Structures are given as C-alpha cells and as structure tokens.
Length: 170
Image (cartoon, rainbow, N blue to C red; front, side, top):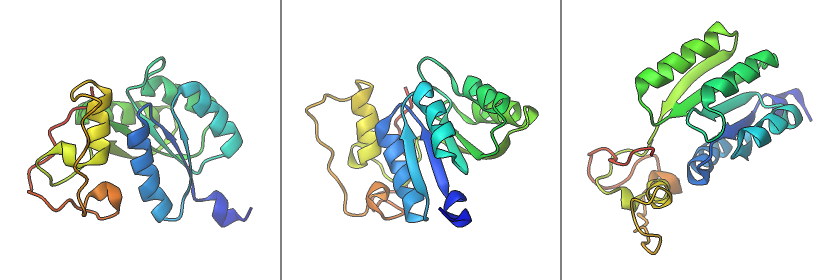
C-alpha cells in the first residue's frame, strides 16, 4: 500500500447503518477507502487494524457515548483527523469538540444531523426514511418515494422545495 493510499482511509462509527452508508457513499466518491463500525467495540478493533487517516464518530451511541470514544482514542494516541456528528445540536458538538482538542486529538470538524437538505418530505429521502422507520416514527411497511435527484442517490440537492428536513435523531 502506498503512502497516498494510507492518507485516504475513513472509519465511520455510527449505530445507524443508513447514515453510515450515506457518509461512506460521499467519501468513496472522493477517493477514500471506507470501513464502517456499528459498535464501539468493533470500532476500536478497526482503529487498530484499518489504521484510518480520518474518523467520523456519532456522539450518541448505545453502550459508550462519543465523548467516551474520544477519551479512549486520546488514551491510545490516535493521530487520525476526526469529525464528530450528532443530531443533538450544535452546543453538544461544540462541547465534544473542546473535549477532543483538550485531550490532544486532531478534531477537524463537526457534522450536524440530519444532513438532508432542501426537501419538504423526509419520506422522499432514503436515509431520513430509514431513520424514521428505525425509530418507530413510520410503519415498517411504508416505502419511500425515492426521488430522481435525491442527495442520497448521487446529486448534491433534492429537487423539491427549500424547506429543511424535519426529522430528528431520536
């Protein structure tokens, strides 16, 4: 593996597969090798084995929250560039960012969720629909009306109205 290959490795920690797959899709389009973990335990195994150059961490995880994950990364001397994501609001992201920086981690940004843009009906966006279905906000038998220009399918913007997504993380 060349040095360039090692500089484009992304590890995603998120317990929601639809969200992780959406982020992975975008990262792969930008030349990253991507690995996804749904639990902190699998994530730490992947940190050691995959040696990511970049990490995206969801702050709200069952079993171990994102701040605890940051503490463990710092204790292990992690040198990867880290982006934190959460649907808990900007204050939570800013607080977690401070914790990471204070512990010597290379925090390069935050990603608020949901990150669907410019559509009036979250049932038209597959990641939002999956999140809503998984949290019991819509019945499992419902199907999304997949739009031709949905951000999740490859276009950067949905083709409907400009109102923002109304779904919440949990």
